Amino acid sequence: MKILHLQQDFELGREFLNRRPLQTGHVLPLSEKLLAEYFPSGSSFLILKGNKLEALLSVRSGTQKAVPIMNFTVVAASKIGFKSAIEQVEETALAQEKVIVRTRVFGYDEKKLQALKVLGYQVGASLPETVSVGGRRYDWHFMYKDLASRYGFPVRRPYAKLGLYPSAEVSKAKNPKLKVRGYRAEDRAALDKFATHPLVIRGIGSGIFEGLYPWVPGTYQEMVNAGRVFPLVCEDEATGEPVGTLDLYKHSQDVLQHTMGVGMYVKPEYQGVGVGTMLMEQMKTLARRLHLASVWLSVFDGNTPAERLYKKSGFIACGKVPGWLQEGYVTETYMTLKLD
Image (cartoon, rainbow, N blue to C red):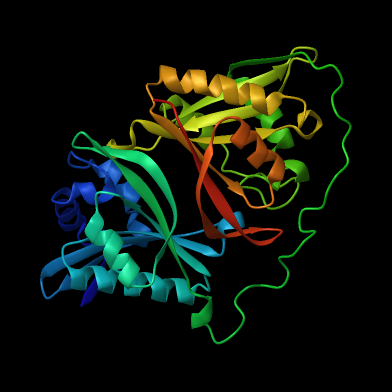
């Protein structure tokens, strides 16, 4: 087998992928922009046997709390091509000292699901009826493999332990006058101000230390403008300030257009006073207006208040996937809410 960077023959990779678009969740051929989204040129590779392209793969190293994780995508034409691609993924992960490798498989792709199981991958979570193709619905599987036993040294770092995000005392808001409204661009500064508070960053996937900006500036507004994120804001009318936010975020795959992910965080002084409940209820209204059949989210193990809120709002747990850094190495629980 020969391995080339995708950028060495981009058109060959694009033609290969567009003969198998369902492996990436698309029915129609992919645009150059979408191909670059799934297979960035700097971290994507062609696997050839002689002059025949057998597989296309990309690897994405986790950042911030996802540092122990490597995510990957593989599109293959044969069993040997698929196996070679997975070997390359795992060798890359080992070189970067990743603990967990993860991927997602659409339920209609039974061959890929079974091939991964044969190679030692487990289904951590399955989101029921989240994938739609050909007039049928399928589950969406989140699969992983723990590589820790492959190392000749302890790869799990001892500095990740309880107390990494210490508890902080805050005075709860008294008699807040809360309302949920649409997001405005000028809300960003206020929301970012409390996004890195210890009582907030311990519950979200971004943010590793108080005061460090948790995401790339400007990208959020770009996603809002592009219609990929639909945000709601809870405001305390007494102060005129945003005190919580919830996002419905959209995936670009054709087979996921009837579902969206949910992300939410609340200002520490307003946690436990009803902000999350109000945002969740208004989210359901927005989701139905967007013609969604379901929404889904994930929550870190140990974030009991959030998990309690999601269950109260009707979400059902669908499994766990390990790998994140929180106060030690933790798993995240995936949950779904059916709307139809």
